[in-house]
Image 1 (spheres, rainbow, N blue to C red):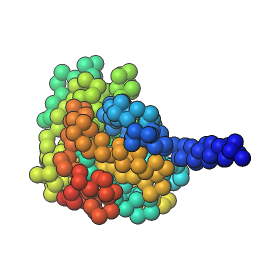
Image 2: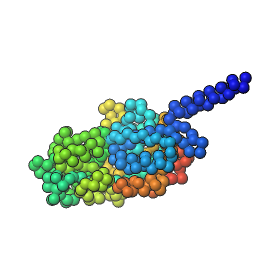
Image 3: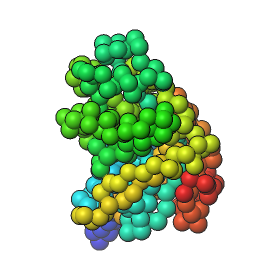
Image 4: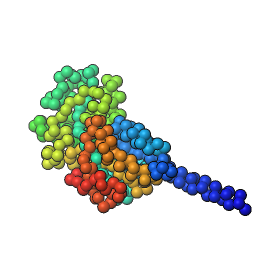
Length: 329
């Protein structure tokens, strides 16, 4: 009888482990936790999130952060269109969450970092010793110069490149400049996400790429620092940024979304169907805390302090002390 009772207890414990383990999340005896935390994120977050992953796993032994990088719009569509489950979705433009994931897959997001557009090149790029913030568009349009950007329908860096070109036409007072830049950039020079362009730059297939300043800094490559009036960096020029727009694919086939120029802001959320919600919350607390902010800053993506949200009442309770309702909404 006693042996039977012991067997039942052991069997019950094993079943509990299997059920909890199936979610990829197990509570540890020390009050911490272990398990998988799946993160879909923008390509431009690859380096800082790699550092965050290592620091987080060191803080919480037994956790396993699993990351997938892609263009931000592709990242969101993994959840919305491909029915894949993630614990955290982090994108280079918070409006991607609002446009593609809300309200079906989440009803909140947190804006946590900023960036700006730049033109990256190498010492072997044509006219590398001449290009600067005043003449870059003339250099790009010279015969033989190859430049590229990411796909606007997959990646915010792609449509931000188009916004920069449109702003440049106004800022430099060069009528027709946008059309010239579009014609000078063939389809072969366009890739799904901004980080895909780096290999083309390093092999010499491209001379210049439109990319985030943080990526140039992370790869220790030279870049043209664009005027703040066109770099999408400074809130001071929000009204000027908003004078240009670019259309990208919407949620449904044939539907279009108009992206209006605005300062660059990264966003993050936890999908409603996240398998490991507790682990996701712990990761976001780490991201928004001192160590996470330090990692973002060191990688050229200045953190927003405090982080901003569209609706504090919908943010998980554990994260509310770290956020406030902000202007970038």
